[in-house]
Image 1: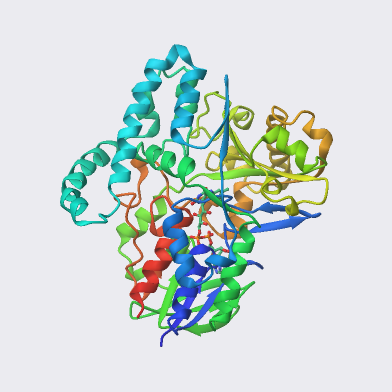
Image 2: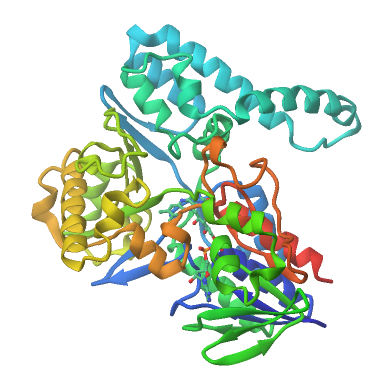
Length: 490
Ligand SMILES: Cc1cc2nc3c(=O)[nH]c(=O)nc-3n(C[C@H](O)[C@H](O)[C@H](O)COP(=O)(O)OP(=O)(O)OC[C@H]3O[C@@H](n4cnc5c(N)ncnc54)[C@H](O)[C@@H]3O)c2cc1C
């Protein structure tokens, strides 16, 4: 039996904690926040429930099988998430990629030929990805190496191309189609992820009916039942090493010895802030880490609305709505004052999944927009008045967008609040409020490829059990890391 210290109780920390405690190890999870879950949490205000971070996830086969291994699958109400897409001249609830393609071709007849070519190439990528699932019988095993070779050629071709570059091959840069399609997912993400996004968002997108916090709570309770110790309000300020080996952590002025330390938290801070001795790290590694680009953060508005469930359903149709303005925005321009007036956003209503997540006769609405890094001098460079003003302006700009689908939305507001990238960082310690690990831009990679999960570090017995072990993070990324870490420790 080994003693294991885990830093962070997001999906990565909770899953690793459960798997290792189940094996009989002595596991302690240190969590700086007052609730477990990291980005997979939620909070209640005035009877309304809101998601703190992610409201959906994909790769259900993998996620569900890990929940089954842990023995909690039946305790979580996973439910499918379908999306509605709104763009200029386009408004459709979509259940599949084929449905979306048909709806787009009908909506933009003059660009039909260009869209058809774009879709054909995305279809090729999707088919490659589907075909790469491991063979199930001897016949598919024979064909598998050939599929793999062909797949690798296509994957290589699009891996290093951005979604904008890919889209520009098919659609005019000033067309609405270009603006809408290039904005799917993260800005300038690898073209390869377009296929991943199609397969996941349209065919494999899930949420938890009772809210993400209930998922984290089930995992936290199970971990404690297995004998694990969950220390909330416990910020780890140092990872302690001896002769280049991780031997424990320090938290609240106390030292906790451990045979293994798992960082289920931000990668940059693990090495640049928590590690007690960076002299064991090559200079080039530290420099690379300091300059490594992280994924974009979000600005989110949380609204409690005096609107009954039925009215909300009439307006939103489904809980998750992607709203594309069709306007051009530049995520690299941190000084564009009216960025949030122009940018696209998502609307999400937890109470439309489950009316119990809002007071009777009322509804909840979240409006989420991706933010450029360090927008407006990092939200006012510590000037409280400026920060408040920017936050208020952005909140109002996003509420204005909601009025496009909920008439007179302002009149219905009974509760409002907002989170900036600085809020996300304050609650999770993710660098700059990074929402999903490293940058999704293929030209700014930290790792060489976007597929692998890397849990080993240059420090012996220190592993990465968070989404940061993958280039593009995500809930499945965090769970993969946890699974791999748990396998390493016998
Ligand atoms: C708005 C939003 C939408 C998203 N949508 C999706 C989606 O659709 N699909 C998807 O797959 N992913 C999505 N993500 C990303 C996903 O939520 C994350 O990639 C994933 O949840 C990260 O899990 P994690 O365990 O690696 O880390 P986190 O959830 O970040 O947890 C890290 C935990 O460590 C704690 N911690 C950090 N440092 C310390 C310390 N020194 N001491 C003690 N505790 C510490 C933090 O408080 C936190 O609880 C989204 C994220 C956001 C913000």
